[in-house]
Each structure stands twice: as structure tokens, then as C-alpha cells.
Image (cartoon, rainbow, N blue to C red):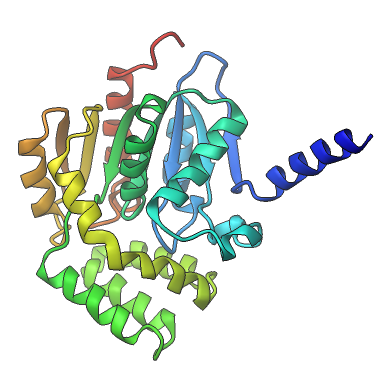
Length: 281
């Protein structure tokens, strides 16, 4: 009886700390696509992708720790350090729970770093990766923003910082929908949660430098808006060095290209996934 109770207790604990996730099953034979949002967002930012992808693939939406409906589920994270490895492991735990052996991964903004980290941890779980608004290296302006944010993060309300960053990264009139979406999602975060995520920027440069130097050797599609002036130049340089990567530039779009040009984003992504079906499925 004691053993049964212990096992049940462990199972209950595992369920309690699992990231919030939602699946859409097309068929048992269809490939899985896992969507990873950025910092301050939630799985709801993929609402313009859902219909198109559900017609072609199985879909897994995930709210990262502290975001969306995962906010109240993680007592262990008071002692579990916030870093890209631990956050990527959260995602892998969901895949294990759902018994998904291999999948395609689609990410936006900071979510692209999590996907890239996951590729280093368990590359056999990844069939292809699609990185929208990818953060691959910080330019002078973005490094200044990170340093400024770390300097004043305890002095001003975090939403002031978030609105400032959103405006600098997405300054144009056509970026208004993306700015409003991300600011509205960030309002749902507690300030302490924002600070935990922002703290990770202290160590982001060595991580990005490593990813620039090392090709994942996995099929990789970068989808970047032509107006993503803060991150597009670095991606253009990177794809020249990485044999397994390609870049598609989406016209009339800024950083959050899945929101601003969803039809193009969806078509390019689904076509790329069809080029690289999961073997044996």
C-alpha cells in the first residue's frame, strides 16, 4: 500500500508541474509541430497559425513557465534556476509526457533561442526547426537595451520597460498589432516573473556566440521580416556560414512576422515541413 501511495504521489506531482499545453490531433500518422512563444507572450500568439497547421499536421501549443496558463503551476521553480537549459527541459518533459519521439519546432523571438538550446540537448527529438524573428546575435542597440534594462529593472515598473522595448523593436505603424499583442500578454506576468526571465539576458551573449559558431546540422528555416532591422542583418550573416540553414525574408513585416504576415509565414513553414517529414511516421 505504501508503494502504491508513493507512486501515485509522484504521478500527481509530475502532473502538477507539467507545463500547460494543448494538442490538436489530425491523425496518428501526421507529423507533430511544436510551437514555442517568446518572453512575455503565450501560446495564444499562434492563433493565426492554428487553422492552417491543423489541416496539415498534429499541433502542440505550450505556455512556457510563468506565462499564460502555466503561471500558477510551478512551485519547484523557486529553486530551479531560470536558464535556457531548464526551460528547454520543461518542453522536453511535455514531449515525454505525450510520447512524442520527434517533431518539427516553430518559434518566434526569444523562443528561437529555446528551440536552438533544445536542439543541443536532444537533437534526435528534432526533425526540423523554423525560427521566426530569430535572435541570433545582439547588435550595439540591442546590447545597450539589455544593459539599460538590467540597470533599471528594480527601479521602474516592468511594463514601462516592456513597452519601451516593444516600441524600439517594432517601431513602425504596421507593427502596431504586434506591439499591442505582446504588451497585452506581458501585462499578465507578475513583475517577479518578468525579472526572472530578464535575468537570463546576463548570459545571453555566450549562448548566441556558441550558436553562431556551431551549425545544428538540422534542417533550419529562418523567417524574418524585411523591417526587422535589429535582428535581420545578423541572420543574413549566419545563414552564409551554416550549411543546413536557409533564409526567407517576408516583405512588409517587422520582428513578429507570424502576426504581421501570417499567410506567408504559414505557407513557407508548411512547405518546409513537408520537405522534411518525420522518418518512419
